[in-house]
Length: 111
Image (cartoon, rainbow, N blue to C red; front, side, top):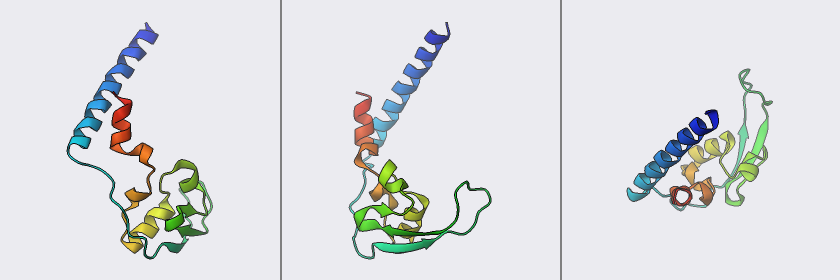
């Protein structure tokens, strides 16, 4: 009974997410190209007792999709340091999200 219930709930969620992705894609939500000016930054992280990692200095090279913390390279998603650098440079942080996370790619999963 538990397996059937889990299957039904997962299937419903899968269908719902597929419809949501298709709707967003239909409205033209895609990532834009970015300007590669001002692409190297030093982000100095302050101490935050709520965070589990240590504060420090992180070099960010937006044009090379690099951050010293390593999250951008591993997850292909912008870390907090990249988001801060993008905000400073007036870049769209979404441009640093790997294409597999775009709505088009996600929508293809549900087909």
